[in-house]
Length: 258
Image (tube, rainbow, N blue to C red):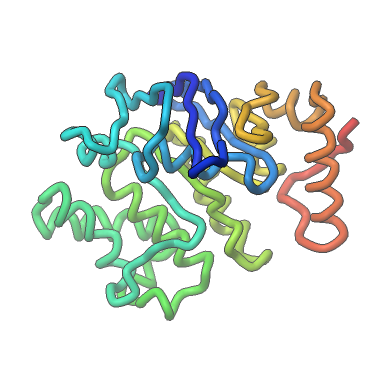
């Protein structure tokens, strides 16, 4: 589904990705974890061609990702992206936001796009908010609209860039609940997250990024429960300590890190 081979990316003289290699198979949920600045969000933006990369290769559905490719817009319809800050159109209702892509990008008939949008908003628990504008919705509701908007394009996979990081703690669970449902339904997902409990529960694999490299990769149970690398153990200890001392503990988080 997604194949990343020795990808490098720098911003000016600052290297951000230093040789990332990763494969995501159809139906897999892969979580990317790591400290801020480790390259996680940049990697997602390269996969979706929102950023160019300097060396290596990224393939989606066996097609090379290049910003200048004449196929890039078609590829983007196959791989959705959900951002930290929702990125909804403020002057459009929830229903109109979800309909926007199918109508204007895929040229779907208006009635079909409307029917599908209503179904998706019901799916994410917002059937009673069809005609609400973003400013009338909570952050969690806005993010669920953003997920419905991504699903409206009928993607083969979805990239999630820290989808709960901008939410108040009490709203995190409603967004993670939608993502759990998508995982159970077999959606291919690549998720940048600090929600260790979610990763433990849902991920088929977890990759720990540090300084632009994947330094540990394995099952959620192995990476989160018995990490091999000292840097992984340090990061997890820091995350769990912060959540207990000052923030919300991740849903389902347990576990001492050796």
